[in-house]
Length: 67
Length: 165
Image (cartoon, rainbow over all chains, first blue to last red; front, side, top):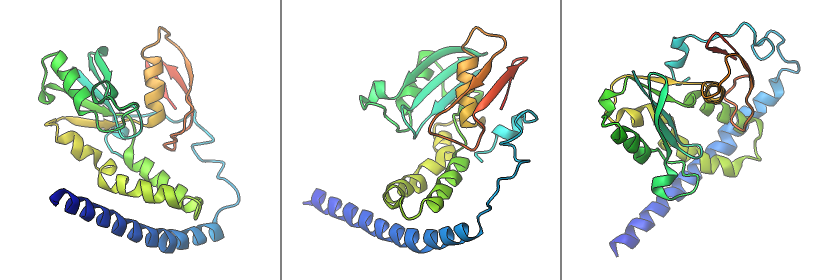
């Protein structure tokens, strides 16, 4: 009985989280996506590090952050 | 100097223990959990690597994590924005996992009892390093390509025991 109740609570929690995430996805992410598409740059930046890899090297501090 | 390398939450979670650049122990979590390609945090693999050398987490000098989790999270968010509304189901599946435990990897590592420095190595550099430092070559050109782009270029070169990307 207790296990069934626990499962029911888990499922209702998961459902509630899914509803919140669905709302977030369609309202917030959708709005940001609209803005992103309207103002997206047509051309890529040629000076980006993607284009010129030869000058990039690492130092130890680059690895200390999760970002 | 002992270094513990950890890979988790993607696929085939694993752990590797090195002493002064030499591999002492390395094993995947799936060998203990019996779940193929297990992507859970490799507690048992870490435990095995440490016990094989009679070490505790406090004896480890550095821990290296195989990617930069926040960079990956940002890339995932941008992908959700870029692919809206096609990625609805991956969003529903992925976000709870990210917000629950994937983004808190540093806290999870600290729970092991480790007090030293944690290094977050860019994903492709991890691939390039595992390829180069276990190879017999002094000089090498490295190309890493996989499904996990942590916003790094996919080409690399090696010179004087340093890797450049």
